[in-house]
Amino acid sequence: MDFSHPIFIQWLKTAVNDQQYIIQRVEPLAGDAGFRRYARVYVQKDSVNSTFIVVISPPQLEKNARFISIALMLRQSGINASHILATELVLGFFLLKDMSSTHLQDVLKPNTIDMHYYPLFELLGSFYSLPQDKVNALGQYDYDILLHEMGLFKDWFVSEFLQLSLDESTDFVLKNTQHFIAYQCNLQPKVFVHRDFHCRNIMVCDDGYGVIDFQDALHGPYTYDFVSLVKDCYTVSPDEKIKKWMLQFYRQCVVHNIKQPIEINQFITDVTIMGLQRHIKVLGIFCRLYLRDGKSRYLCDLPTVYQYVVQAALSLPETREFGLWLKSLAEIFTQRLYSLIGMP
Image (cartoon, rainbow, N blue to C red; front, side):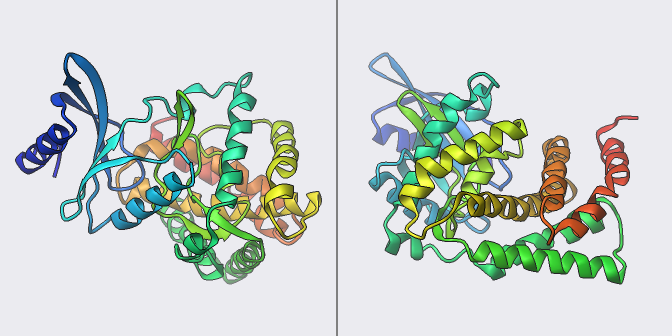
């Protein structure tokens, strides 16, 4: 179903009229990695113009009930999350307040990035302080899930994208590496984890920042959202800047919000290993988005994620052998990527 379907149009008219507005026009927006579709609705009341966001989120494919309950939990805790005005859960329709038209990605520049990231570190600290019983009820981001996610790397990046088959010894190295990563991540203190906290899911608002796309949130490792932000798949920052952010976040949030004592060197190691888990998974996800779902926009971000994985893997003795193997595939990876995006 799309935004021109008569059933959707009738629902939207009713939902907007309930807010005492009249629809002027509906403009589709760029989609995300899921199956949701978004549009901005331009409306008017007493000659005053305003906007809403409308979403078509297929209930058989998306976690709509979780989206509603997590939005409520976040908003009740003072976090600026999606404000739901109307729903049609059977069909998967949502009418939301339009918190902003500016994503964090739109405003990130080398000379201004700190002024955005430091307040966002405070926001992550707020995640750490969410009600424990409600966060536990979301489910556990545990060893089994962490390991399962990394399986996408072999299935989609190695087998489908690079079109490689692993020999027995390489497969053994890969399995051992992924088990080590999942085990270490699962040892970390657990907090609310957004699980996709990056520059395309953070809105820049008049009064701060807003978060969207949080329906996959779980109770999991405390470094996951931090590394998702500072080693963002869609923007690259210098290593020295990332080290500076690690120290700042450690002092600003970890020391004050994590009950279990954590030394700075342990925190840095935790961030490195957590980043490995996320980016190994994302290599598989981005390849699947292109090969299965036909979403080519993620191909251009593969080199960033590939470099994140190689760099982090080479920095740890337990993952170095995996890192050397992955680094050895650089030429194959580049040739395959260029063949798909039309570069010689």
